[in-house]
Image (spheres, rainbow, N blue to C red):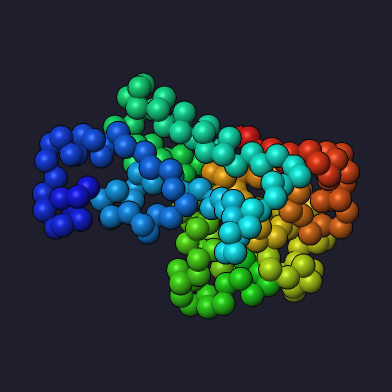
Length: 212
C-alpha cells in the first residue's frame, strides 16, 4: 500500500498482503486508494467529549459491532472457501447484498437535483449497497419510499398503496452503517407501524437487524 501511495508498483508480497488485509475504521478517506477497497467502515465511537468529559454508555445495548464482527467472519469464510480471492472482492459482494432487491425512490428533499443524482450522498450510498434508485415513483417497481418529510406529496400518494415501505432516511443510514438491512417497520411513516413494533420489543430491548 505504501508503494501505491507513493506512485510505485506493488511487489508480489505487498499484493498478497493487501489481498488478505481487512481494515476496520470509521474513516475510509484516511487510507490510501489501494487500501480503501479493504476498509470495512464502521460508525465512529466517541468515549469523551471535546472537554475531555466521559460520555455515558447508552441505556440499550448497541449491536453495531456485532454486525461488523459477523461481516468480518463472513469475509474470512469466503477467503477460506475460495469464494472470493481477496478481502476487497468479498466486501464488495457483501456490500451489494445489503440492499439487494430494494428499489427505492427518494422524497422530501433528500434528492435535491434529479438531473445529477450522483451528487447526492444518499443516492451514491444506496447504489453502493445494492439498491436500485428510481427518479420517479412507479407503484409497480418501487419497494421503498425513503423520505426526509413524512408529509411529502410522494408519501401522501403512497400511503394508499399497500406493499410499499415508507421509511425515514435513517433506515438507509442504519442499514448501510451496519451492513445489514434493518427492519423497515422500525423506521416506518405508515401510521402506527413503528409504535406497534417498539411496543412489542420494549424500549430497552436491542434492535436486531433484519436478516435475509
